[in-house]
Image: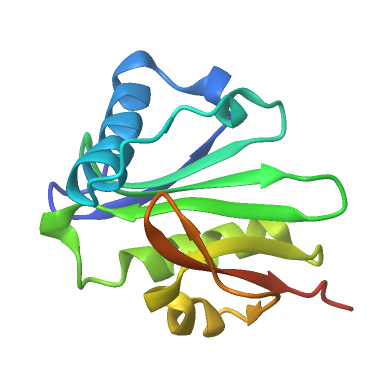
Amino acid sequence: MPSATEVTCHVAAITDLDPVTLYQLLRLRTDVFVVEQRCPYPELDGRDLEPGARHLWLARGADVVAYLRLLDDGERQRVGRVVVAAGERGHGYAGRLMAEALALVGQRPCVLAAQSHLASFYRRYGFVVAGPPFVEDGIDHVPMHRPGRTS
């Protein structure tokens, strides 16, 4: 049994999530992406329900502290919705989730749309800029790609 301060990693399809955990994951995403970043946009985009979608999160006990979504885009995987609760930043949680996600991705190529100020963070995981910057919901982004790996 993990201690009250230990942070544990979890991975699940949406159909395997209990209602309370699902609520916490969606609440964290909304708290940061919609409220904190002041971007009223359709956070619930339907992709969470795709059969290949995986939800990765870190929890301390029953409390969600960080989250990311991994989508299956056919030939490649897509990382998105990487978020850490405001009071939990600075502990390496986003990096821990990225490492877990890329372990699931394995040898396949992977893409993401990084907020521009976070591009250097994703470079640490093998991502490179793959196109011109763009603005999404009033925030500067850059497309990034991690080539497939050979054994």
